[in-house]
Length: 345
Image (cartoon, rainbow, N blue to C red; front, side, top):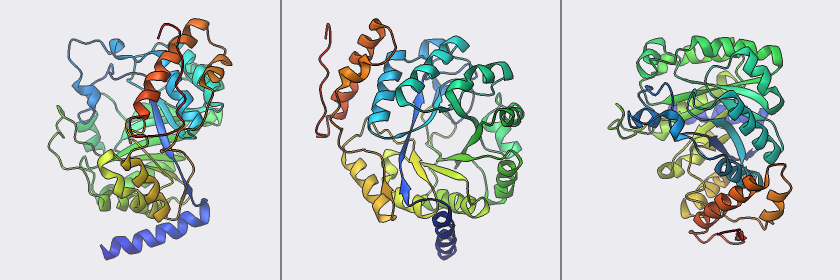
């Protein structure tokens, strides 16, 4: 523990030299709960019923757009737009990206598996970077946990993205079997592909997967990877994944050099004691929390929806989905939630 403390102190000094003392919550916008690959052995998508087509797991566009409105007005960051590989057709994905871009007012990170050149060019007006769901760079472990999702196509996409001045991000999961001896492999991979950002998650033991009974990594273990990365790659944007039962880890991860947090079910727990703890943890780490997890702003939601360029029918559906979210988010006593009056409510 003394070694980790010293490591974190060094990492914190490096963080302060390169970044402001701020942090935020990043919300990943999912468009599906199934995947055409479906055999990554840690992933909840691999537990979907065998007879259920991945295309049947798509969320409604109206739900995603309603969530995007919340992200904008709560001043969360969009971690990335993602979902199962192969679930959306290019036309569907382009419409989704264009809509989210219009709502949040900034370009997006996209994580949908390896993207070929024609599609990458097609999505360029709406994206600022691509995310490789790499999970691990240990070749033996990767073959075990992602048997149908090799690294090579992601590496090709990373190199292709440089032609378009797109940023590059990757995912990494602590707790699946990676060891400290593998750390040089990770650093080499990051430097080889000029990775700008890493989403560093702790394993969430998911029912129905081979990791169902595997203990999640300790906060010390996840912080070790964060601190080592901060020291090895000082300007890397490091996003630390947490869960509702790991809120006490937030200050620890920030002190280890993480920039931001994600994975947490912020809509479900909005305004709850867990959210209060997260904000307090950020303050304990000396960071200003720039997003809002506690109190909804006063927003004329009808006006916000009406200004969008979507069809009238889609706007009505967005209103309905938004009302569902607002009701859920009001369960923990959050104030200033303006209820939307719906047509045919």
